[in-house]
Image 1 (cartoon, helix red, strand yellow):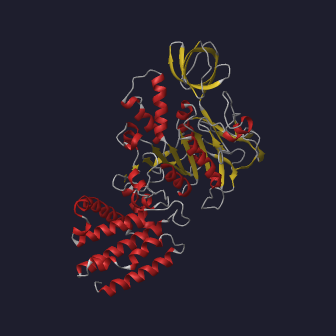
Image 2: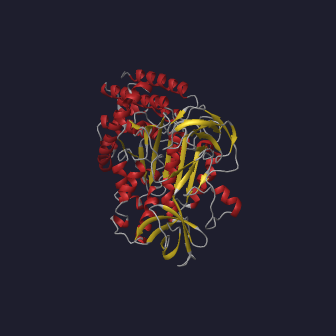
Image 3: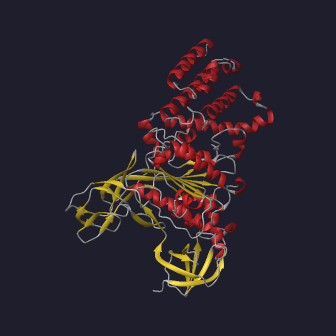
Length: 578
């Protein structure tokens, strides 16, 4: 097999090469600078390559070398706290050697070859190991223990197992057939890692965000999409999810976002404190930064790089949340490469296989019984940036066919300073029924009814708003005025949440339940009072109603709420309606 050829034709990031034997998805080094690229098409003796770097200055006739390997990532201790580009080059390492701008043709190992890790064996000489068996552990960060597993497709009896400090590429275990195992694996990014079986998603991902946990929950191992126009709060919502969701590992992919937004993420994340441990959040985070001014082909690869790293930690038995911000930019990269390949365009110029590629990505989420015998999950949350906030465009529509949770961001809500600006009328969760049992057991048997009643009130409010626009709320019957008031309380007291407030940024489930129950309790008392002949104007004067608005900001929430509930009881008694 020939491993050297030359450039035949160049069209942006797409280069056609000749005189070389290749397989689909082989990684090749293109030109005198050895730019990294991937074979995406073969026709006769010519191969089409998408290059992951800027191709300006390349000329036909320059040499091409085939590595014979697909695009793969290095998996092992040292992934956490790392910041990579779309093809797993560590950005801090590149910055040390060449400053703020990455030069072309530069390669750096994904995992450090210098750092030594303290390896503690978990198997003994003579013991049998199968694919996925944990042969030892390494303390990767203070709170995350890294399991060293037998790579998929490898099994046998242990001939030798070592203990002590090793680098990731040093042999720690030898099998009887001579197979040498190191602490590092390589895995092709486009191939999902194997599992024993997929499990039902029946545990919610607790995010501490009331509108998500309360009305539109996502299950651990589930899929969710956050579509929204520019400035509607996608990135802040995803950062809140990264910070507060009850997963052990966070993989954040900044895919084609603006440089200043990504810079904010890169500056903020290392400063964030993990609320669970008090340690830096970066100690359980992997960041993949691929900004809009980086080459489009690397953007297309970045999503696969991220999900492969997530699968690796899932196989150790961890719950992983993966944030892809945003899949629209990923789809745009596919569209650009597709047009360079002169493929027949589909809707709005996107390739005809757009839906298939999105499905492949989201289907790698799930709660699984891993080869290691442990149970792990990947929850995938993809942001979508529809041009002009148009949810009928192809990326949003194809995403909606795949994901089971839809958090629709609304620019009008953002303009009214209602955050998170998730529209409760357009959003939905298909996990609500499956998670009902968990809520009954862990929160309250009343929770599901409370949530359904709140949704019903918000729907009624939307219907009444059309009449209010014409005649004003004062012209409505008093019972409908009460419906509007309770709905307003649900919106402003419960659904609105301040991501930058020390107390309100995270709301545990018991607090969510007590707050919603208090609002519902006020509504029930007001309804009874109204039916007993108490005028609406008197009911609206109750001080406990206004105090409920502030209680979510109180550090001692339970104590403050109990005082308000007592006051509420007394006020309605004095009205004579209860």
